[in-house]
Image 1 (cartoon, rainbow, N blue to C red):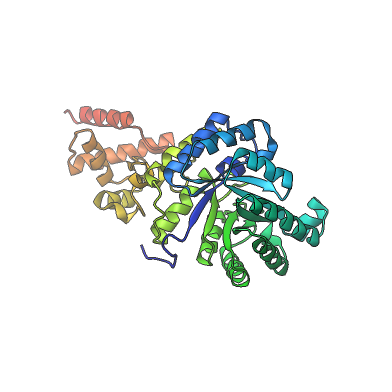
Image 2 (cartoon, rainbow, N blue to C red):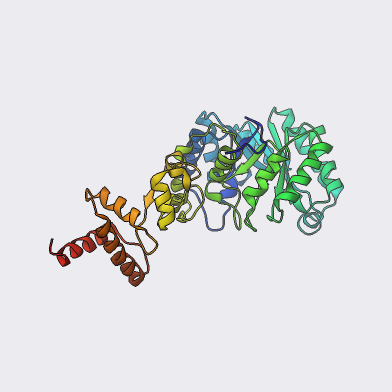
Amino acid sequence: MADVGFLDNQVKIDDTTLRDGEQTAGVVFSNHEKIRIAQLLDEVGVDQIEVGIPAMGGDEKKVIKKIVDLGLNASILAWNRTVIDDIKHSLDCGVSAVALSISASDIHMEYKLRKDRNWVLESIKTSVDFAKSHDLYISVNAEDASRADFDFLVQFAKTAKEYGADRLRYCDTLGVMEPFGTHDVIKKLKEAVDIEIEMHTHNDFGMAVANAVAGIKAGSTWINTTINGLGERAGNAALEEIVMVLKCIGGVDLGFKTERFREISEYVANASARTIPVWKSIVGTNVFAHESGIHADGVLKHPKTYEAFSPEEVGLYRQIVIGKHSGSHAIVAKFREYGIELTDEEAKDILAKVRKAAVEMKRSLFDKELMYIYKDYKKENGS
């Protein structure tokens, strides 16, 4: 596919499945699951893993220490408020990076923090200065940045950079942005402040991935993701979708082991007591399931007619589904899998029976049901 303007090796992934993903309502990972998810994220190629919130203490702090001790290739980042005690908890865990998060919008300052802009800036100065004095990599998170006054956001970012922050996390906390606006604001922010920008996007309007990609097009170099798009409310930008968008549409291969995407998606789905919808982009089984006669015929002749990438690239396999919308070529191909070569007349007759059965049962047919139809057909025709 055509390159749409990304720079090779420009983008890095900071995955927050273990923090924002676990903040999904009703989701709790066991310590064993958190460790295993961290290992899987590292193995598939994530650059940085946001492992949790050390200030919670208890099991949270213990498991973060265990993840740090695994010696993974990925940088290990912990989430903090812009509070010195929070950072001390992160230091206790031995992480190499911290996210320091504070609200950037006036509505958050007025109703949540009950503080003013000066207080926010002073909080950034104090916390960033302290973290820098302990040689930590620092991401300053501008919470609700998408609803912040732009001039104040520039001041917010400049203050973070001046005191030693390595990057700014631009948070579309409510998922209220759209890609064109995202591109414009990130481009302006990059022009105003020379600091790396990370996209943290939410999916309330179904645009988390689109907004993250728009941010990258405008100059961001980091994306905050979760497996399966887990996250508060409607979730975050899905890791598997971001990586494959960049690879297949953007022409940028981040070097991920994408063939393990279905594996890690299944593990996180089970750990979060969720199922992977069959229609889920990239890792849903229906991405490579073909029933429509025209589509199935095209794929059987050449997979790229109706598949943007091969199923093996993400750990899946192709399925030719037989049902109401199937065509005779699909029938012939399916029975060939059973070692049966149908004539054109047999395929036409069996297809009529398949369509009738599919309508009656309101679904596609199982292999055994197809064989029953075939055997009944052969009996009817005295063979």
